[in-house]
Image 1 (cartoon, one colour):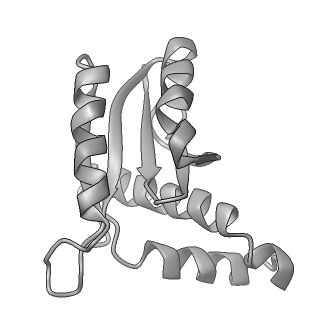
Image 2 (tube, one colour; image 1 turned 45 degrees about the vertical axis):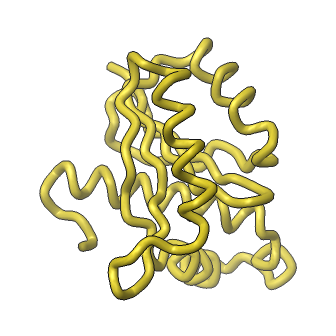
Length: 142
C-alpha cells in the first residue's frame, strides 16, 4: 500500500507527518522551512509511495477561513499540479496547536522542549493526520 502525508503549513515552518504503508499509524516526519517545503516533498515522493496529501485547513471558530488561508490556497493549487497522481485535500485543523501542546504536557516533555515551535508543528501535523484517518474510519474528532 501507500502512505498518506499530512502538512501543517506555516508562514515560516511547516510540520509534516506520514502514515505507515498500511495507513493505520500517523508519525511525525519532519519540520521544514516553508521556503524549502516543495523541494522536500518532491524528494520524499521520489523515495516513498504516497497516495494522498492532507493539508490542514485553518478555520476560525465560526467556520470561516483564517488569515493564513491566503498563503495555503496557492500552495494547495501548486501541489495539485506538482503531483497530479496524488489526491490533495484539506482537513480542518482547528485546535491542533492546542492539542499538540496538551500532548507535549501529558508526555512529560520538558518546558524548554515544549517551547520548540518546530516540534509543535510536527505534532500538529500528526494530529491532523490522526484525525483524518479517524474520519475515514467514521470516528473523527468533528
